[in-house]
Every structure is written in C-alpha cells, then in structure tokens.
Image (cartoon, rainbow, N blue to C red; front, side):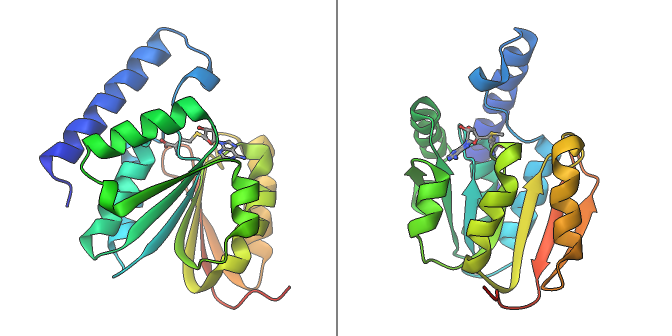
Length: 199
Ligand SMILES: C[S@@+](CC[C@H](N)C(=O)[O-])C[C@H]1O[C@@H](n2cnc3c(N)ncnc32)[C@H](O)[C@@H]1O
C-alpha cells in the first residue's frame, strides 16, 4: 500500500528535487528522479504480480525505488536496485528506511555492468534508468535474466530520443518481445518478453 509514511517520504524527495532544479544544480548533483506519474505507473506494474522480483538499474537516491518497492510489497515481492555513486547509495538507504521499505528493497552498490554479469537471478520486472548511452548494453546483460511474461520499462525514450530512438526501434523489431513507447512524462519503452532468450 501507499501508506502515509511512504507518501510523506516521496513528497519530501519531490520538494528537494524542485529546490535543486530551482537552484540550478547540474544533473550529476541532483537525483534525476522520475516524475510522480511515472512513479505511480511503476507502482502499478510492481503491484500487479504476486511475489514479483523487480530489478532497477539506476537507483539514485531511491525515489523510483520507493514506488517500486511499495508496489512489490502489496503481494509479497521484492526489489533489487543497482547504483554505483556512494553518496547516492547512502541517501538511497536513508530514504528507503524512512519510507519503511527496507524489508522489501535491497541495494547492490557498484557498477551495474559488473553486478549484472555475475547475477543469475530471474526477474519479472526491470526498470532501466541509468546513463542513456548504456541502455543497449545494460539491456543485453539483463535479457538472459528474463522469462516469458517479464516486463522491461526504460525511461527517457522521448526526452532523450536522439540516443534512445534506436533502443525503442530495436525492442520493437525483436520477435521475442512486444514493445511499445508509452508517451508518459519523459517517455517509457514498455517491453514484454514473449519467448526465452536464445543466445
Ligand atoms: C537517472 S538517475 C536514476 C533515477 C532514479 N531511477 C529515480 O527515479 O529516482 C541514474 C542513476 O544511475 C546511476 N548509474 C549510472 N550508470 C551506472 C552504472 N553503470 N552502475 C550503477 N549505477 C549507475 C547514476 O549514478 C544515477 O544515480
């Protein structure tokens, strides 16, 4: 559920993000968090499946992680979030704890490329929100971890169309997926896995 504790933490993070944007902080010093309505969308996807295993690539200070973990909690699932910036990781831990979601969310600190190369876990929902130039390579590492029925959501495909139009086109041309660009906020590419990965 989206209880008062979670909503209060999300509201504080939204206010801090507004303040940092108004102060003109460069992107690398901000959380670069998703919009509120994208957070609600992620919550809905995570809440839709019992025991869902969610993977987030690019956790930052935990704003989208809180939406995903709150969704996963509804039917007993969990979130694994990947983040390499130590300051963001410290903020992530504090924010997820403040939201009361520690039991449903785990942070793996380090380079997502290395983490994905060594994991053999299987995921039902992947949220891809790291550096835009890395989406293709990160998707390639995540794809073997997905079985038919799994969903992949990639953020910023409209706001960063110069880089990510190719990502969307590749997913839409892949016969093992069905993929559509959802024009919500900065643009989400939503892909469902239809067939096992063949290497
Ligand atoms: C757009 S922000 C994520 C925002 C977050 N999803 C939210 O909505 O609150 C991207 C994050 O990905 C992290 N990141 C980028 N490349 C990474 C990598 N190779 N491994 C781990 N984290 C990475 C950055 O440090 C940054 O915090």
